[in-house]
Image 1 (tube, rainbow, N blue to C red):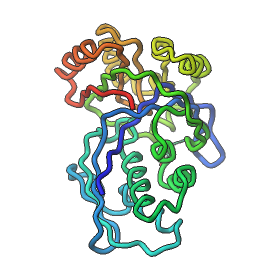
Image 2: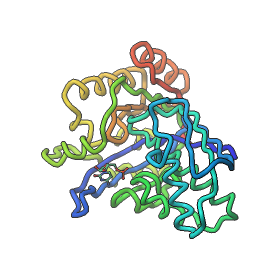
Image 3: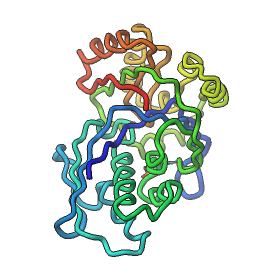
Image 4: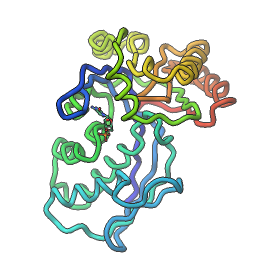
Length: 282
Ligand code: C5P
């Protein structure tokens, strides 16, 4: 079985507070895009094995794709059959685009289909909860509001189709580290999530784009914050309707109505950032 696993972007990300379980309560508007990984699932071997074209990624249960397969059969109450998962990675790793979570979600959807759809999509999203906080959203995809740890999902009217210039500067970001940093800070600026939801409901793309914001932009170490701000500045200079950072970063992106402008932004950004992509919303 071959499956496409789209990357996600955060149109907004707000951290509401720390929870007793150590996680944080979040409020975020998520969007899938056409940049994504390709997975192939084949029966065979013993247990679940993952291979990818990035040598440093884990091949065993530490890989979220394998963890998802194990969790799927555990929830189903059936022994795990031999399974080989190959992943062609295109989504940058440690980038804030849910690359690992979307691979896990693609595995859950594929196995559910293979086993005759024993779980509804909502149940499948719940199976994914234990694999990672972004997995439930990735199971459903599209435009959605995610709350709680990320598992409370409300589907939203789709973002009007547009072009996206996506750019990851060449340093990785550790999600747990950024969450730890935000605990010691006062968040001064938050996204206008309600305003963005109203703009989405009205199909108002410029209204959505200019309300995009992510609280983690001000949590990155200063040198990294400056790099992300420079990318956002270039995107806006090139005609983006709005630009923000995704997840805990460091990927930044801009939304464009016109393809030529998005292409121009990508050409400029790719001079200094290898991981620059032109995509569309899904
Ligand atoms: O759930 P997941 O393993 O993807 O989360 C990675 C890390 O991100 C957690 O260990 C935690 O530090 C942080 N996190 C959080 N609150 C959330 C989601 C993630 O603190 N809602």
